[in-house]
Length: 413
Image (cartoon, rainbow, N blue to C red):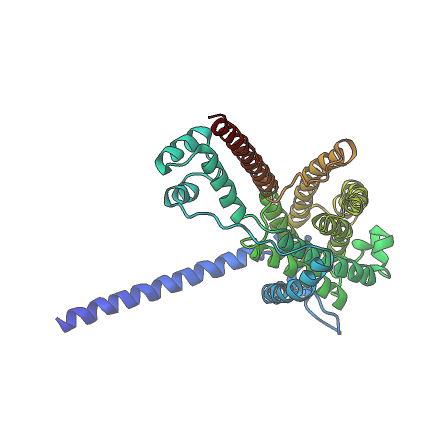
């Protein structure tokens, strides 16, 4: 019996060892295939040509491992920033922490809310009202209150916008400082001069690493951040940005990559500042900042990006080298990014239409599908209180009139 157990364990150990060895061989084969020079570098260029020498440092894929721990460092910094800087700033703007009204617990309605839908139809409301011995009006109000329990407060939205504004502002200033004296900013031909044997500068290293770490931190915080209608577009954008920066790093497209980053950061500052003032209720300031953002967005994303960046990455390289895989893949990613620019341009135009023609500054990319429900609920409560007040007045007046009639009747007797 003991011998059988030992034999089975030995067979299992040998099988696991063989499987691990086989998987290790497969991983090694995939790794060798993935890093083939013909995928990443121009013809005749080898990875050995990009090894450090004579004090010159070149990009290495292993550098990107640091973006993950730095992303968690940014999350920690963000936590303290929102608590000790963004929150006091929000209170200075007059934004108060909202105290949500507690709802009456109801097992039937709660199960329907979690398991079926947050937006019941009229037929569902009718059936739930019968089951719970409530009026349809009460059921509607319960669902509205329950949705508002999960709706992020204005303080949280302000804190998130303030964090993004601060980071984009810092990175924009840093990008200008890093790039103002670089020749490829003023002469796009310099982007490809000597490619790919272009050494890595310390400023380029930190610019890339911090940008990538920031986008990783945004992905890690998706679960707790405010969800918007364009949530999926944001996920695609962040993943595309990380993919693009990672790929451009490994293929040493650093010079063009820094240009892409500065073009994007310069517009985002104004959007986040407009959101901050919108949450604070400064509508006129919000409108001015949003108009500035729209102008910079259209210029940077719909003019500079396609006619300057894409021209630099798509047309100019052909004067230096033959098309190869990483050149094609890089430009495909940039075109996906441009498609996202057009997608957001549609929302911006809708918001401009609201601001100009409808005098409505509500963000069409509202935080969730129940954007105004909390305000609607407060209005309904005020209406109901007013109605009840009127009813009480009527009853009081009616009772007074009846008393007068009764007294008169008794006096007549």
